[in-house]
Image (cartoon, rainbow, N blue to C red; front, side):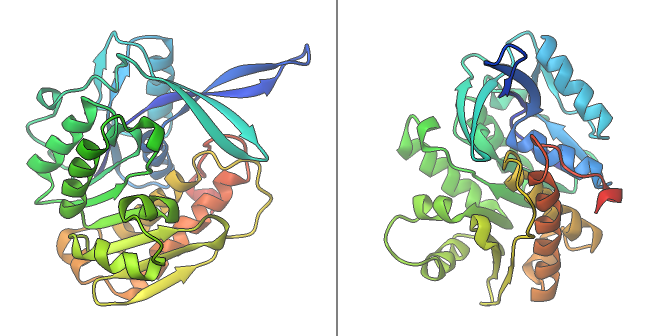
Length: 308
């Protein structure tokens, strides 16, 4: 089972009301939650480790996990509030305002993390849960304790406005990247991690030298590229669809990548260290296929396997 570790929240998406003004409609979301939901719908064994509230929004998130066949045995419940992300869409592109203080997800500590992860073969981390303390330290501790025997993928999905102490964040993120087997970044993420005017081709080898076996770089409408430690590079284009919005696009891309690597038997530390360019290309193509369906409909609504 792939265990997705990180935030689950409510996206409050602006929607026209019958009176003509905009209201906000609650949609289940969060980067790590979206990836778990997408994996469940693709038929890949998956679980979620997060903090969920006992409030009405926490129940909505729990119901969504169950409906998409995501194992919730590692969910940590509390009476703290659910994180809310107010989403404004402009030409299909999302901007966010978060209400996250003292939330059920953010307030997780290293002491809340499980001592054992039975039946878990791979770990996936990312999103705002790697920037917000104390949960960021909790997930880093989980990786320290359980990452050595399991395949690890990280998508930092960096949001600079969330980072209160850049030095602490960089130190923690660099330590997690060094323990990862797959690191997926956008071109903007890569420029933040490795500042400077150098092109992507010059920065990727530096990221590979930090520890991962595979680096994936997404470039929005220009597609995605994957890089291996032996110097191999593969690329896939985006699939052309009518874009409704981009909410959850990267999250479901990651699910497609993980699902294909799991299906082909490559989602282990040894297999990823010897991954072929063709196997990486197949994983990127699956990610692009899944993401294309997600962006063609409103909200983070990943496809089921029969829709591919």
